[in-house]
Length: 325
Image (cartoon, rainbow, N blue to C red):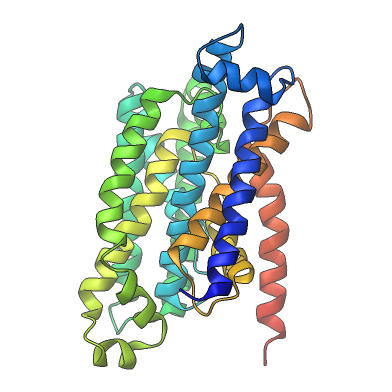
């Protein structure tokens, strides 16, 4: 790894530690770092608040932001396009569809809803990949097909909600916003297991990902089995997105922005998993701080903040694409 990339990753790690530390201090009331340290050690009146409420939320923001950053890196490398992102090509909406079917049609508690979300995201990824490879794989084709699938599933989701009972529809809409409120250690145990499984797919494919980003011809020449790599990459990227969506609901635009910003900070060619993951974690932890602070003592869902900021970022990317010759 080049020295500038090492420095960039170190800067991102320091930013993440600062955001995480601030998140531990921020709650219904502000706590000093010394009080938080005592709480983490199991001493003082804030022990339960820090260890059981704030710490799971901060860990969740770091872990889920990293997963979303990795998902964005996977799809932007796969499509060789800055707009290649799970939320752009419909994987978030597909996960929401799976959760809606369980919540509204089948009926179920948190666990069945989470499983429905994962299945919905993976099935959507399978449909998008299958349709985009019918006449030869193309990154641009995958994005266009993904946007079309996104639009169709959005219509399906709206129809399901309109047909649902009022209380179920309200709960489904609130889940769709994306929130870290109420995330506990039991949720994180499942997320860590999923992240470990996904790492088995991501880490061995790190070299193949970089080679594939240079073009199909170079990738094949260097020994990359493109079809196998693409299936593995889509499953890993969709799995990262579906894991987060299953627990928090859809959190938009972190996966889109994290790889770009990580590359800008490290100043390294291509899109790498480590800076994308660190940047995603920084983005989500900082967005959650804004969500807790902007209307305090009312806490906004973090998805509202990421959508507000990410929509502007997407607009800038689209303008940049239009201006290219």
